[in-house]
Length: 232
Image 1 (tube, rainbow, N blue to C red):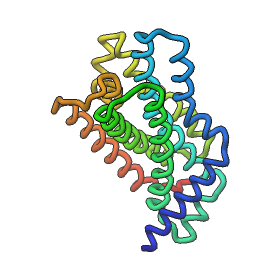
Image 2: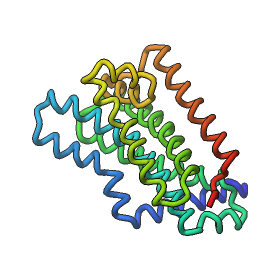
Image 3: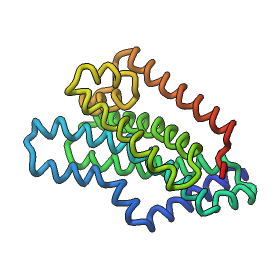
Image 4: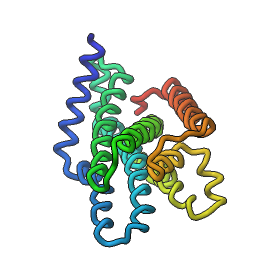
């Protein structure tokens, strides 16, 4: 019960902090806003290519950036140390923050449902794809958060990592050599499901997604055990 209370307290605190920060809200809804703009200025054919890319970038890049930056900011302000000293475990903190970022990212993704028409089955596919992408991205964001000491150190790492993972699927659609690389990364399959509006029917695709999850979980566990979260 104490653990649940700690996680809920961190979650509520982070939700309140996020809602107070206009920049956070702008970034969370940046790609849906861009999608609305592009819907008015490009053809349907171009929109069919652009929208899945915006959805993928929103699903992948935003959780990575915010998960890592929130934790590194708490480190910089020393509030994370205070929380841990007040009997809040590091993993409880990560779950609370992670659930906050997950919820905001999923809500911002669902804005796309009001931009273009989806039927009931496509909505289920969209939500499942979003959840898969967000969870895997949160793992990457958590790993980067552990490796960073403050906001200054996390930015130079987070930006290129999130951009590579988020943009690679789009560029792979135009280059067969890049596609060979992209097919080993979860974001490729997230985008494919956004494009086709159907869940992957290949066992190999789900196996790669599972491997991505297991590898990221293992890397997170190793760094968490070695460095901990409050590695100031």
